[in-house]
Length: 166
Image (cartoon, rainbow, N blue to C red; front, side):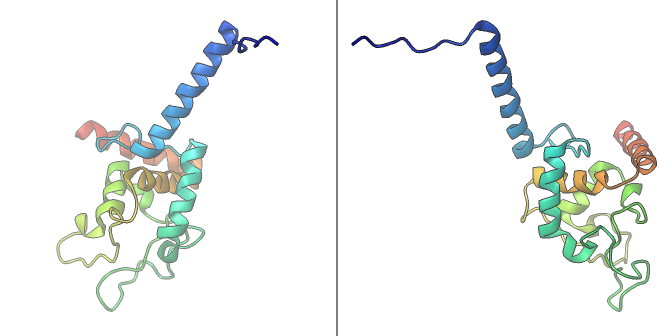
C-alpha cells in the first residue's frame, strides 16, 4: 500500500486562503487593540462586528443607566438632589452626538468629571477598569449606529473639526 501525497491547493486557492487568514487576523487585532484614533482606537458604526460587540458591552455596562433603547433616564435635564443630572439619552434626542469621538471615549473610560465644568457633579463613572479600550470604542460604535444619517453627518463634522484642532 502506498501513501498518497497531501493535496496541494492551487495558486489562486492558496492566495485566497492567505488573504482570508490575514483579514481574520486583522479583524481580531482590531477588536483587541482598536483601530486608528489618537489612543489606538476608533468607533466605526458601519462595522457589523464592532457594533455587535458594542451592543453586548452597552447591555452589560451602560443600559442600566442610559436605557436599554438608549432612551436615558426620565427628566434627564433636571438636576438631582446631589447636584448631578440623570443619565442622558444616547439616541438622537440627547447630546451625546454633540461631542467628538475622542471626548466620548474619554468620558466613557475615565468618567464624566473629566469634562464637567467647575462645580458640576457628574454621576457618570469611568469604565476603563471594567472594559478594554476596544470594548469602549465598540460601545460607542453601537450608540452611533442608532443615530439617523443627518445626525451622524453632523457628529462626523464635529469630530473632524476636533481632530483638525489637535
